[in-house]
Length: 346
Image (cartoon, rainbow, N blue to C red; front, side):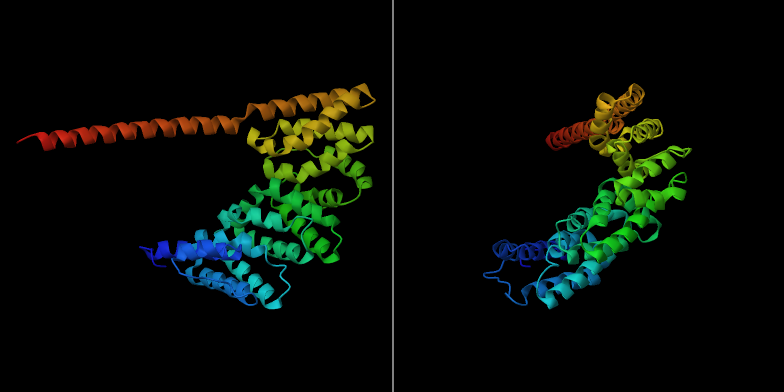
């Protein structure tokens, strides 16, 4: 790399070039590397690129993870290549890449994994993404990091329980069970398998599941990971034609609004729950059901509108802005002092 002034700089340029090549942008890679010409072999090129990324991951380890991970998404997107050597190289490279990412940095690979598990993807891509996901929840730190992403991650995995491919359904079921247990909510722990069966099962299972869930006494705070486990069942309960089930689901939703530690925990689920609670509160044939749903709707809206996380971010931004202003003033003052010293003939 001709223009690099430091090994780390060279590594960053090389990774950006590899990513560009994986995405078919050869001219960009050529410019980054300062070469007069560059091309990718039409048969073996992608396999060579994948092996190169894997080798960099193994050689640099955790120290290079932040740069190596830049090529993760474009590499994973090629797992469906018809050529067996390319598939093998990408499988190996992506496993190496996930292996060097710090467990607490799961969010750096989560968007690519979520995209690869989309229901429209091929069975091979979904299976490999589920396999990579299993690497990510290793250890206490990995489990905690994955748990914080459950609001985005769990719905994608639960959708695969209805996949047309038998192997995908089986692997997704195992993954969903692990993900649900990662919420580490003591009150929900005895009911995880029931919640999983209801979330991925038919609508006829909803009535009993919601009824059993209504009997759970929540002593522990219900944070975002726990809500991610419960909301799929509540969603089905609110959509049910059974008025008793609608009422119980509304009661649970309202109670949970009193148990959340902050509005940030509720925010990911407001788009799902609020319209359903609004529909039940307006359209249920029994006044009692409408009243209960209306109270739950008001509680959810109140928590969502409080926006505690937004207030914290605003306060932090103000503090940082003030600190930066003070720093600028100090630098200017130092500059004036230096200038005065230079002008002083003594």
